[in-house]
Image (cartoon, rainbow, N blue to C red; front, top):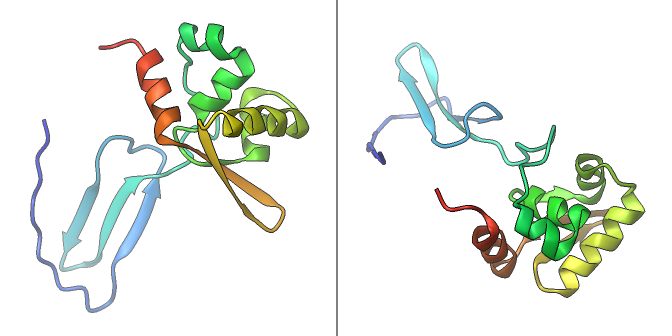
Length: 134
């Protein structure tokens, strides 16, 4: 059930924003005269410890490592993080990411020596189409 609430709070001492790995589906707010107003929200990178499950059809279409890489990109990730998640070397992850990028399934951006990858609309559509419907 979606429920939204409008809150009007003065923040003379600021607002605290806290990403949380434990909140995955909502935003929580705390307001009190005793504390600084705080907003808790789902952290990106919540799959940093393990990849989400990949649909079997996606494994068959792309191969296991590429399917796992694509599924893990439900949140933008760096190449080395992606490699650890899918249990491949960074050069192997980079090769798979290049193939997914060439297919238009992901976008990559670079800052210095660090590349960050995220799903394109086509990549998200492929994941959505392969995922079992609830």
